[in-house]
Image (cartoon, rainbow, N blue to C red):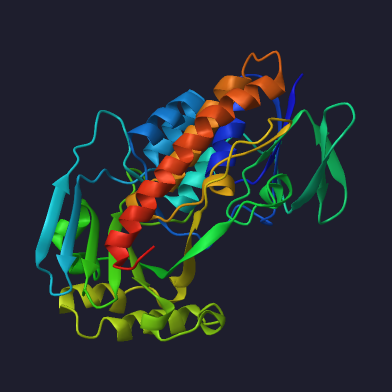
Length: 376
């Protein structure tokens, strides 16, 4: 039986693992996180039609049903405002059928882990690999030990160890923007603070002098049963220069200090917008560097390939990163299912994945420049 090793238990890696196990292949996922608890990667993820199609193709019916049931209530509006709450743009996108439009990252990951206890190994960090004379590939772990398979898939994100070895010339550039993520629990006290239009999807607010902020609610269709409750996501975006805090200080600040930074930055904003930061849970704040992968030429296909942010990192503008990773998972699983040659399947996958992924990166970078008001 073909054995697939996946480095990284994020969205793309888990969707791929679900699809391959569904097809009867032997899969082992190695994830460096010690447990499937929340990571500082963001809170709310937008799922588009391509992402919905990929999920339907990859997940067993019971897992797909779980993911849908524990997703967020669908939104239909994307809008932009000045920092004084004057609307400057609005577009509606009515949901289609059972499609979902947003998920909570932690709850979504829990859903993708359903039925995967034996296949996913936490606390195992892939640091390198070796292609053996037999054509198989061996992976080595930072914690000691190794494993062998017919294919290694690097789904280990922007800092991918697999990419560094496979494509040492590949680069990821800093777009010069930092996002400060946080969230406001929706309670009887805070729920009335959310402007009605902000509750319909994703809202972007900009003061045109260097600060932008994104807002979106997550109201679960049904309680996920993992302790999560409805919340309102807040994101403040700016360059380090506008924030007035260098990276070496910013990434060492406590959540409460980062929360206070958002309060100071929005001091002159409309009270209804600023209040969303003021009433947020200060302990939930953390910073992220916005990056984008540079284009790389196709390489000789072999028993090692890449998926998602490990090859085509992109900014969160447009909410397309997770959906592109899901499409990668769908495409690779489709090629591997029933393939007589792993390398031929990988070659067919990479012919589609590479140009498509970097086209999405280009669009996302362009949109990021428009949102953040910075040359990227």
